Length: 215
Image (cartoon, rainbow, N blue to C red):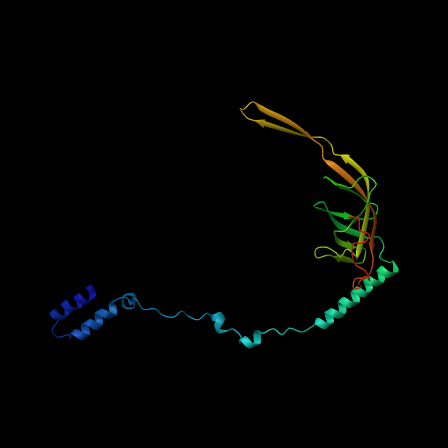
């Protein structure tokens, strides 16, 4: 507005110059920002998008290899079953879930259960919560447990004893209150007698049930 008023004053002083010419000259001197106030222009197209390849060329072709994967799995299962049938698996190991903890065991190992465990000394047990079993050449994983008729892990209770004495000292500041507590936990020691894979992976036993299970 100040520029327009100055243009009008100049027009009254200069009689030989037209109003339109003066307004044109003064308007040209006004910054472009004031002339384009409130006008929104679309954003410029990114150069990366302008040079992008067509969508059809970006499509990925997925090859159906289900049959190949099925054949590969069948070959692996056949090799594992052959080792199990012929007794070529060798020394087996297993991961068992016992009293809230996982234990990696092999035949002949001693396992210490660091909590109350009901079986007495000399009892024979079958550990049915087997999470994994394997040998030198293969491993079988459960989701989360393997079938109870597939893997058999047997153990014997060899000793029930107490842990070392733990001392707990409690002191309340400025209360003249002190207390000492002695605690010994019950420990049960198991010996792993045998780890056995009873049948092939895809073979179904004739009779399934709870016969012969101790634990």
